[in-house]
Image (cartoon, each protein chain N blue to C red):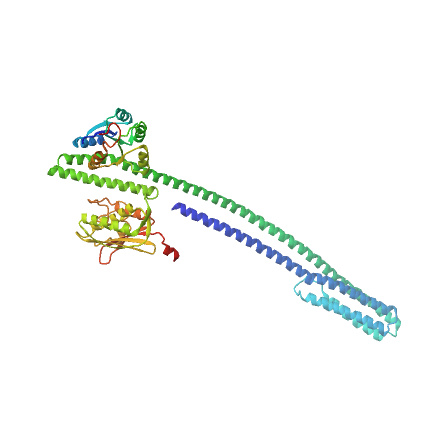
Length: 127
Length: 467
């Protein structure tokens, strides 16, 4: 199953490795480098899964998530963060995150996440 | 430390100041007692001698006048037996008074300023002899008796003068004694005033010194508090730095590991696969190191981050042994367990497991190849004691205290890096044990090897509470 995945991540290295990994597994990744471009692409729609970094240069990923959920978007969202504080997880869950992927994560963790969650949303984009 | 020495000097000074005050009080007391004794002595002297002498002088003078009176009585009237007896009685009284004065004066044999009473006694005795003779012999010859009796008024006048002189001397001495008493009390007052003023001045100086000491002490305490706050701030900054650095490291680690894993997925032939696998393994090791650093930084900053809950010791240990067996097998060692514990404890099971696995990992690392690791656990005296024992070379006594230091390694030169670990394991195990209110220790094992012991407090059972 090929999934359309939006990755909102400012770190080029992370973007590149996710791109390589997902492409190799037959998925279709799209990238945004910050909050503003992430919001634009996400609003355009058409994604089975969003991988969302929490700490972005122009804002907090959780705020974008809350904003999208408020707009009725049900796309599954995996938060990416190097921080593991329960407080951050709680805030993410409250905002509507589907899962939490702690850096450093492995290739298997990433693929498992995508296979498990892509398309489980109840929105129009679900396959 | 210099500050401690200075603080000690201050205390010593304060003690000296108090001792000085006590000495001052003692000095005032002693001076007061001496002055009082002096006044008392002066008064005693005056009453015992000078005032007595005045009294005696007075009585003596009266006695002489009485003798003179009865002498004239005999001269002017018929000297019959009754009158003679009266005169003789007066003479005896006078002699008694003389004897009394003599006795008084004998108390001061060395006092040159005293009147001479011997002259009086000799004059009195001569007078008596003359008049008594005249009374016996010449009483029939009236004219001759009157001549002798009239002549004998002269020695009586002499006796009276001597008596007056003694009386005056007594009065003068009594007056002088009272002046001396006045002087002694006045001197005493001034000496006391002087001593009190002097001591008050000393007290003032000491008080000022003590005030300065207190101010210094207060400044010192304030400085120490400021230093402690600064240290806390530095420590917090250090912890923040380590935490930030650890988080920053996680992103490149993700890239490193992810790329190697993707590379492995693309091509897993001999040479490349081996290289990429090693990169994956090393990045996993580095991830653990980052986690450990973060854990230690947090346990430095505040309490150890624990997710504690009430647990039964039995199931906790069972799970622990299972994980330990898996780890030992991975490390090529055997595991023998002897675990029996009852009761409950408040603990973070994941962290307890982490600590015990550190010990098992170390035991596998330092024990002989393919050796057996013994894990035992017992609950008694309100503590859960878990021991992990190996048959390795043991730990040199001088190293025992250092093995819980960060990055310390007991093998070889202590700081040598070797594959398989970075030397944070025991530090973390210690932080976990201490975070649970427990202890960790390393003991030599009978027959060679090391016993690592974790001791954790258990919750009081109802039986314990009843006991």
